[in-house]
Length: 515
Image 1 (tube, helix red, strand yellow):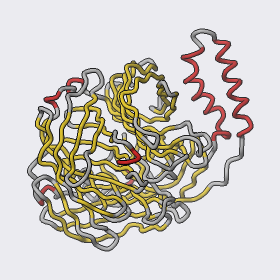
Image 2 (cartoon, one colour):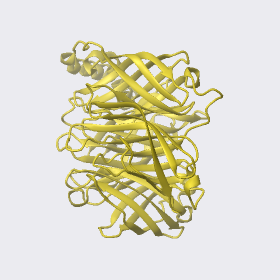
Image 3 (tube, rainbow, N blue to C red):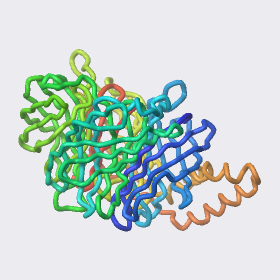
Image 4 (cartoon, rainbow, N blue to C red):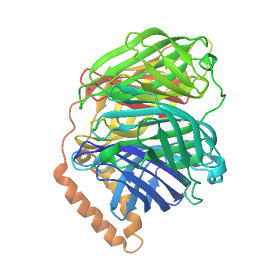
């Protein structure tokens, strides 16, 4: 990590079960120090804006690591995994909060890091058509998501906007206008106000990644307006029509099970449009612990000039709306009470004869997307696929039961011709924090060393001994291995989306595998 990074975190507070979010920016100096940072926080206790921050970080040779953010109100620790590395600099990362040791007295969630382009920190850089997608909760704690598109003038006004919003199954389709400010030169922060027809204004803090990407979070009072966060991306290829969907595309949806606060909904699959209004889905669905694997449904779609796509329901495929970013790439919203929210991405061309095991091989970063319920696991790690059918993964996870370090998974995988892969004979061995003292001590050592060792090495040793004494009572044996199945769909040889299919897992989530 070296440069200016924007970040976005979305999760839940243990005590209230309410949504929390943090958006911000900092400089990583390439030597383990985080400086010149700022963040905006929102949640059930209210919003706090433009909070100064500092911190430390450490990244291992395998591109996994940890970082700590410190503000006037305290410190938070995150586990991360880097990807999209060029010239020894990571352009992207996924992270999870990793300090909720009991699973009941902190918060859990997942986030994104993006290397920023400071040349885009100008008012004129924000211009043209954009699509966006946000998810979160309303003030009553109901699942909420919104997708849409608007045009930015380059001088601070937003016009000709349209959106689709779903709150617990109640869908609306407002028009949008708005305003935005010039990004600050140091961190790329801009304030955006969206004015949906028929409802109150939506105030956002957004951090410029580039002229074509922003990470955004709602800053209005949670108790009256709820909380949303997500991404804004520039649109290409406008105006759109039905031919904008003309190639296979992989998608995911993350949502809730209607009527249950403790079960989540996860769906991944392959969309195959014909460019003329007909669409076929190959899909895998985990609705709580009810599994719908590898099913095919046919339906129809229509595309408006602004990139709004209407997909008609068919079988297990609910009615859904997409807003195109480019051809075969879009934000996607399920209009049912599941309130599924996610993204669609064009699948790379299959080799002659279709995809095989060797089409998806190597070491991949693995990270969960933003959770839809408080019980979702947040995890980051590495997945290794050898091209011959052998799968292994090592991940650090934050759960309702606490923290788990280097949870190992092994199995065998098989990739079908359409890029759908199944990991079977799956064995997950879970080791709690107490069973991974050496690893945890190493992590804590990285965070303590900069504060202590330079001044007095003996104090570092004493501090680590104290930590060991505190953790020793937590030691516990690993639970027995349990068998499960993972399913993934290849976006390309370097990326896939994955879900867990198990009749004993009521809280499935989405994991992104990426190099």
